[in-house]
Length: 484
Image 1 (cartoon, rainbow, N blue to C red):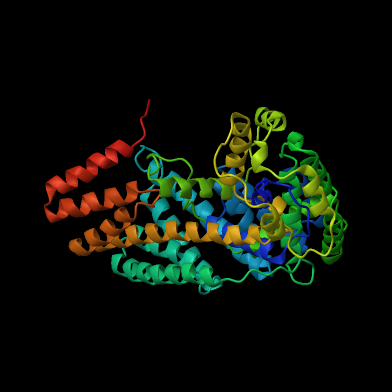
Image 2: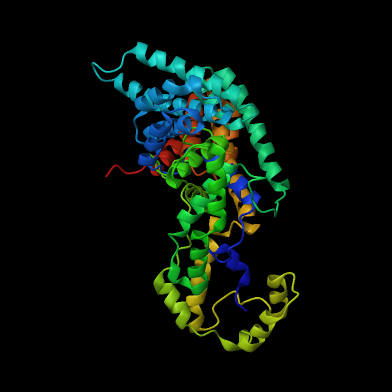
């Protein structure tokens, strides 16, 4: 029997109404990622909305905030800060105001990096410039914490900034509290229940539902239509999904402003980004000065991070597909076609997959004949690919998103422990710091393990354990990327 359980892992295998839990769990993933992998705006449409609304009302203010976010992405922090400062006092929507505050904070952090680098250049920034900017960032962190009650992601960022400013005792206590909250969050994911209720304007934030459907349609265009007739039809179904038109119409009505579909989409994307209440820090860099850790668990975590930031369709090449189509299964291990047709034509079945497996058995787990190789190559690709939003009508999608949340949270837990150890080292509690770092390194899962080796090397050095310190510094050197 064909490996039917894998069908729902493949893009476009089944076109069903999107589940409410699919939208909400994807939002949780994006919250953990922060501002990475967001929608690239149609800046012409954004500017058009601002012109039509004169930058007023929810649509106009949302697009000004969205334009500021675009400036941050384009490495123009000063323009982003100016945009936010211009309208911040006018924003009434709580989520949008928090989003604007976070964008300004991110822009100021980026600008601080530039100013600090310029301190080393004659005629660059002055100490007063840097000190003033640090004070503004401190105020933004306080305001963001007040607007994000109970959000450990923001508390974590504020604690790291306190550590940067030399407020070591304060930072350590905050990081310990964050560690406890992350562990509680990870435990809660194991108890999470997946709803099978379809997403609608009644149970889902309208802007979030529309943004999800639009992004889903956009991603569907990148799927290989030559995979099969089912996939080709699935692409057409998603691109012509009536729920997109219905949700777009409802959102237009809610905004109460005459806008084109493209303009409404940009407003939806900004309000959706505000609604998920993200942090505004690069906790998951895809590139850096050091190579990622090489363990199997770390590599898998990095793959999950990359896929979560920029989801990709299942990469079945035309060559693989043609080989599968030409291959002939080893017949003694496969049911006759007429038996399968008879099974599929019968009615009153509640669980096709379970009954199909019961009737015909599972497929072989390894190649039985030369003709099976193409099939197993394709199957391997499908198994390694995470469920895409094209399968958001099936409970497997939100279940997979919860698993991504768990893996992202574990990475943040390791980061927090490393920062705790850095604080302990500065507090001269060196043995505690080393013990904490030993645990992180022994877990063998942290993608950015170079942080742990650097922190342990410094702690061992201060403790006078030079040979151990040198060993960690050598490991750090091995992870450093070549400049050539």
